[in-house]
Length: 78
Image 1: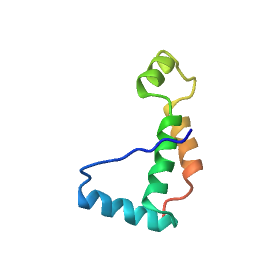
Image 2: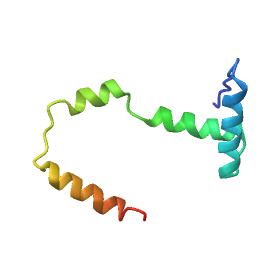
Image 3: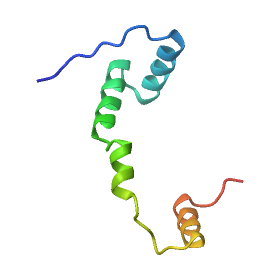
């Protein structure tokens, strides 16, 4: 069953920033916040992620990681 959440005492500059972000993607502020709340709820809590990844080591060297990131990012803009 859907629930309603109310946020009180939101500063004007914060609301204005949310309104601009919502307008950029063509949605209302409530829709933007609904999407963000859904995204936040689906993420693993940081403490759980840290515990799960603690002790995991990669065989990749620093140079290999940097090369892979450069490949993903593509060329630097000129």
